[in-house]
Image (tube, rainbow, N blue to C red; front, side):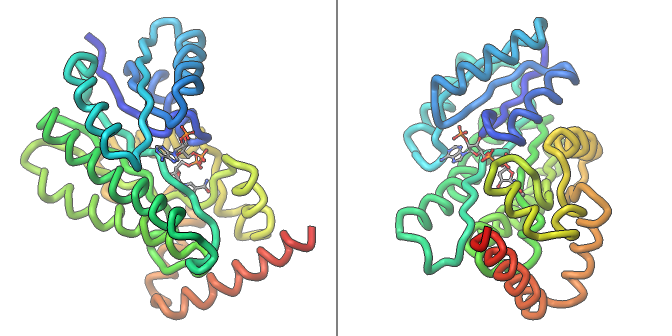
Length: 265
Ligand SMILES: NC(=O)c1ccc[n+]([C@@H]2O[C@H](COP(=O)([O-])OP(=O)(O)OC[C@H]3O[C@@H](n4cnc5c(N)ncnc54)[C@H](OP(=O)(O)O)[C@@H]3O)[C@@H](O)[C@H]2O)c1
């Protein structure tokens, strides 16, 4: 029997790259997405591209507790061979905290924090040991990001939790890695954001394919924090040295400038 990897948010830009890289490396897949038809179509496409691959799919909105419970009930029959979880799904909300309505703020927290934490806890309780868990956070987890404050703060929570969790489960032979990428040109909004960031946006951005391959290699080595790209590792270290208040000022100014450029266009 082949090993199986669960990938959440498998129909998005990075999710699709993870699906292909995992398939290339020989695992079968269980993929989830918020839209059943789209997730099914993605599974069929993958099985056409990789004839040896078995892909099961499940509709899972991470912000809905009942759907998370249903997923684990379904896994009791359909989840044989599962050894890895890739927490890729994330609700990306660009904007300052005061720009959002209540529902959006709750959704960001529910998907990125509540849903991802619940899924991870249930996954470990269900499959117990010899596991791998990769969680997609962001480079923005390492410093406060004005105008992306709620999103980056949820990613920060995930990063802190996963680093602590890896210690808690170290005796169960569970690898826990957190992926903290810079820009990824997956959606039009992210492509525009990267463009308006100029040279630093270009240097920070990596393709989803590169990131998926790099992250899986580092997960195998049980690396705690995975930051793809030398420039992003440089940003991480300089951010630490400069301190939070100063970094927030620099990031806030850059973001405002970039947003103005976008508005002008
Ligand atoms: N793009 C970047 O620059 C960047 C940088 C750092 C980190 N990240 C992180 O990378 C991951 C992948 O993002 P991406 O760039 O590939 O963007 P994307 O194409 O928009 O993908 C985001 C994925 O999250 C899923 N998702 C959103 N809301 C959900 C919900 N309520 N329940 C379950 N899944 C939900 C979406 O699933 P459906 O398609 O099924 O709705 C989608 O597949 C995210 O965690 C993101 O925060 C992205």
